[in-house]
Length: 344
Image (cartoon, rainbow, N blue to C red; front, top):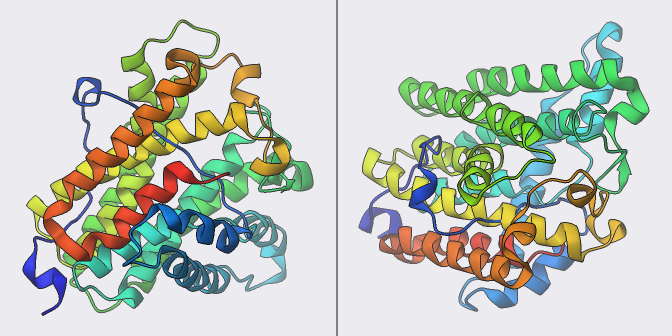
């Protein structure tokens, strides 16, 4: 029998507002590049040898790249510039962790990868929109992303803003238009999850609080709140969408929410560590940016050693949340390990 028939299904309506008190430690961010496969092979050693994480990630990366490439095509000369700008950032490479999480959750419950592909594309579109906007002079003011000039450097602030706006709206349209073979109510749930993860209790709200706290004395609970929303919300949405499309129950979604919240926080902890330990060349974006902006980070608040402990604790807690799903959770467990052991 398929593992998904023997264990509860996991969905991730990850826009759960968990209070900071629910977590004892924070987490990690990530950086995507076309060097992904080589690094995946290195990180695979952190995962059970019974599961080939490197091959799994490369397979899902290629699936994602093909789906992304087909998702944006200019249909008339008047849209050539904005589509070019959108494609420049969408196809700029990356590990594609968010689509992978969506696919892994779907597979855990025996769902169809074809049915999950539109949601996986939408998740990467939303992520790309956030990167385009984060890099703008009015936000993080960065000229370098994934080893390439940022969108506004090439196309100007005006086109970059509009490309991000168009990417966000297209993410919802793509799911509504392209999702086939699942009940309509599941598609509606997915659209709701995607909407929540970008709103005031998602990316946008987390980013605003992050900006307001620059140069301020930020405590641990506030730091966790920022990254629960700015970073973890989209990772939670990724797992939730995959689980929902496969038909996971509300109880299974709750378990997935717990898993994804933990890896989302771990993702940010890892990102903060990399910001002070890796070079610009290794990261593919400006190193030391948070320090220069006087942002509160996990290493600044806790120190490097404690931050590493926190990241590992969060991953351990994430795995415990989905332990009841057995071998079907192997890809999600592997991705949790990968998130804190990546080099960019």
